[in-house]
Image 1 (cartoon, chains in turn green, orange):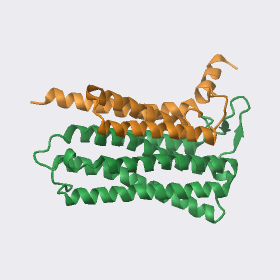
Image 2: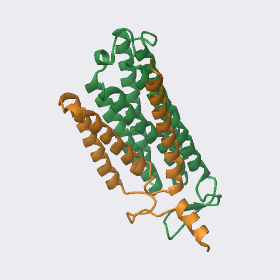
Image 3: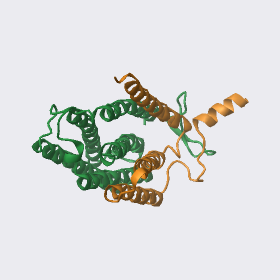
Image 4: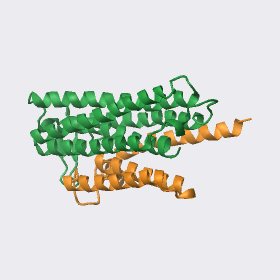
Length: 202
Length: 111
């Protein structure tokens, strides 16, 4: 954190020497996530408008493997728990436990991305390419953008693990972990919507 | 302190109503996760159990509850400054409005 934070005894919240009393970095991340709502809102609405307008197959019903995607969803959900436990641990000053939870989050995120790569590959083998039909184009664009976000999250988490291994991720960096955690949870929240809207309502 | 200043400060930093300050406990996070897990299991169950016309509304409700739980507890909005909630809700509201307007426009102009 760049600004000196003081603890407000009446509310228990940290107060920063900024015009809002909040950390600029944290506020900045929330503004960014707010703008991301528009990005994914646009992608999801595009998918909903177009996926049933394909002239030819394959259709969602033909390619989706709901049991497999359900397991991927559980994995990503679990990574949200490990992420919040990492934030909790570093806030308490427990660096080793925080590192353990961060590493677990990275592994769970990697499993999710691996699952998505497997899913894309199997869809392609079943004849659904990016330009095969309008369902394929909108599906790959939406879930591909989400996958890229997860991958970026993994890279940020790996940098935190690296800092932690070098002993540079102490309690004073708790806010940094929390801010990256916010990004990670947002990616999970977007998947909650995609899983329901794209996969389960087929 | 003037009333206006007091209201401004409450807007920026309203204390949560749980009695816990700043962050929740690990036990609470695990409880929230268990609820999320059970809701996801119920969502997946709708794939094998036919609930007819209730499918879409029930899926939407479960999705919104999961969304609120993650944002409220894991992202700490329930415990953080009210300003952060407004910043996020503003983007979310805009996204929903954009989607509804787009959907309506496509339906209206469709030949």
